[in-house]
Image (cartoon, rainbow, N blue to C red; front, side):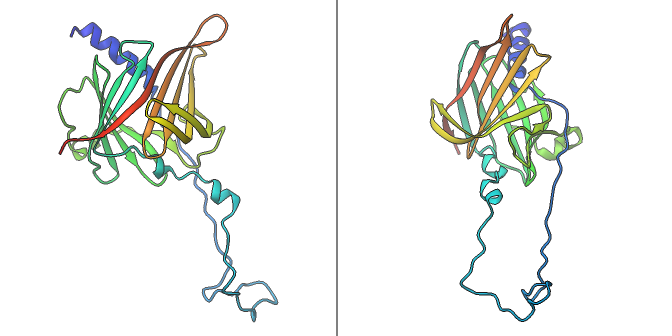
Length: 239
């Protein structure tokens, strides 16, 4: 394949990924006002015993909380994506064995291959390394790449509608999506505009990670959908 075609394929892949600079998110914590023996510091309550039959129920905020770990990409699988709108819209992503917090993947869109390394933490999903034109069968060790890491936040806590993460806006956290692989609930939807000329929309699902990408280009009146990449099937890597 000519260098021009590989470059064109890589540009399409970049449009569908839309990576940005690093952003920082805030963490919060709460403290209990109870003593070690379970009694309260409030006046008049020292001699009262707790009813063992009463259980504390989780708050509405706790019930609605998004657990980012559920959206981590799976390991040791091959994800096949159906594409429309461009010859390089279809993709095959091979996701390898985790190395601690780190997970490597290689994406092939028929024109080029890109190596990516993600860091998966309690705080979120972070892209820490990306290498275009990578044509090896397996990724290098994470240790050999760490000196070149540049952290870019993908999804970080708290996952709330309207929050901005690294130039991406969370527009929905409980989206229902129908894909070639089937119907999926509780999908996190992120969108990012580039100079009011183009729009990228990414969809993240529990147990699958990234499941759909859309690229829109703005004509004279509105954004027009140009390229779609959707998860079609997932298979285990051969041992």
